Image (tube, rainbow, N blue to C red; front, side):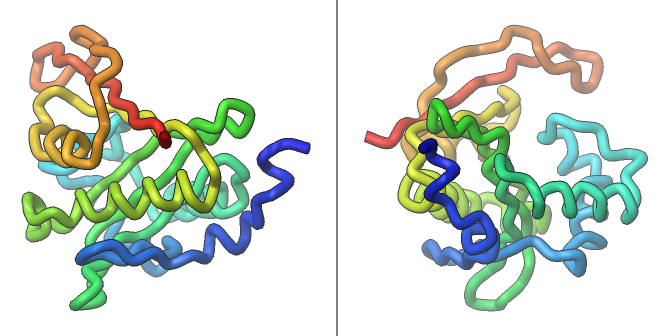
Length: 186
C-alpha cells in the first residue's frame, strides 16, 4: 500500500483550516471572477510563474475542474476570518506521494492585505495540511528574488533557501534569480 491509499481526497478538498487571521476553504467557481482580476493585475502577476494575460473564465473553470479531480493538487481560497472576505488562493501541488513531498503556491490577491501577516498565517495553515493531514515530509516553493515580502514570510515559517537559480526569471528586461526554498517536517 502507498500513501494515497490512506487519503480521503474528497474530505481533504472540502476542509476548512483556520490559522491566526485566516481561513482556508475550498476554492469555488464563484471565486473565479475575482481570481481572474488578480491574475491580470501586473502588480500581482509579476510574482507568479505564469503569464495570465489571455486568461478567461472558461480557462480558469477548466483549471479548477482539473484541480478538484486531481490526486496530486489541493487548492484553497484564503479568507479574512473576521470579515469573511475572500483575499487570495493557495495550493499544494505536484504531490509526490512516494517521496512525501509537494510544491506550495500562494497569491494574496487583495493588495489591502499585503504586509499584514495574512500570507504567514496561510503558509502555516498549508504546512499543517501538508504535514498533519497528508503526512508529507517536505514542501518546496519557488520565489523570485525581488519578492521580499514573500521571502520574509517563508523564512518566518521556517523555510530555508536550498538552491538559487541564477538569472532564471526575465522581468522588466532583467534576469532575476529564483530562490528554491524548502521546509521539512521533523
